[in-house]
Length: 389
Ligand code: ADP
Ligand code: GN1
Ligand code: MG
Image (tube, rainbow, N blue to C red):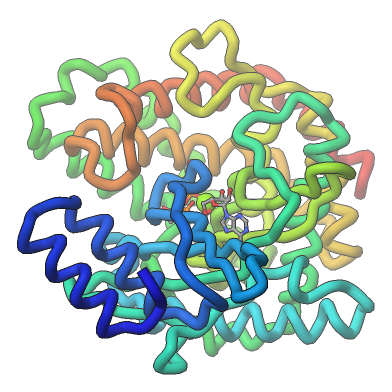
């Protein structure tokens, strides 16, 4: 399919009429034809392991036969209710980062996401089914990890997320739209969780009473950061809010942290949560959906590497109070994420993508195992971060 729109549209129509390809494929082709990609469409592959958006690597070939990759993503409209505002945030943040990276002598094509506009100049494309698509420069020769066992690599992840926060320290926070209201409002999430358990729309609550109790038993922690914000002991910063370790691309050869991606939730937030969410997967000894819980714990060497990287990356911008609270960020984000997975299981897997039945429950269980393990190791974790105060 060549990139001129009428031809692709005709092809899409024909495919639909013959019911030859699933609609999803048509959407992809239509979207691919409507971004400013160079050359002729060759192929697309599903890409990465994100739980939210549908991500593809598309390949185009120019007249000289040179192939170029792009990231093409269908945004999750049921989660991000306002994709236009969302893209406004992403354009604002990436343009700001590009200026900073250039000023520091870095490579702005590689060290931040670069939005590729649609042919009508907008930073997104709406297909004939009303789905929203966006495109990014594909950052070549990088890898993103779902599991890390090497502290040096996790140090790089922490460093990248810390730097990201530090670079955005003077970003005009008021211009950011709240893409998911109350995203890390753990109190609100706790109340929503209790309601979901009461409603029990799929009659699954009885299957997971122990896990539900685990969440309820820890109500005391849900307000901790909100209380500190209210008392003025900590302040909001512009944060990433989804610092899962596979949201940083590392160089394939050097394993250095290259680019922080997945900017859908960049909003005012709490510094410790960005650290905590990175530890949640980064310092875990097993995959997020591991079924054998004996394999799952929080590795303290990895925890320290992540803390060292994050604190260094923040470049002196974290207060002593914030550094002291880093273990709490890890515990709270892991708890909150486990609660979200469990709620999604109870509600019938409507939020996070799953690839097998029970996967959200397995994910919840690993998170709770990690929380318990952190609780056992609490004093050591506190002493680790004190070294960096
Ligand atoms: P989700 O919101 O579903 O997590 P992401 O934006 O994180 O989606 O993208 C999913 C995966 O695609 C990432 O974990 C990464 O592996 C890969 N990816 C995303 N953007 C790029 C890019 N610009 N270059 C290379 N790989 C990318
Ligand atoms: C989602 O998009 P992804 O896969 O990087 C989720 C995070 C969760 C994470 C759990 C917008 O992150 O909040 O912590 O899954 N993102 C959103 O793995 O809800
Ligand atoms: Mg992601």
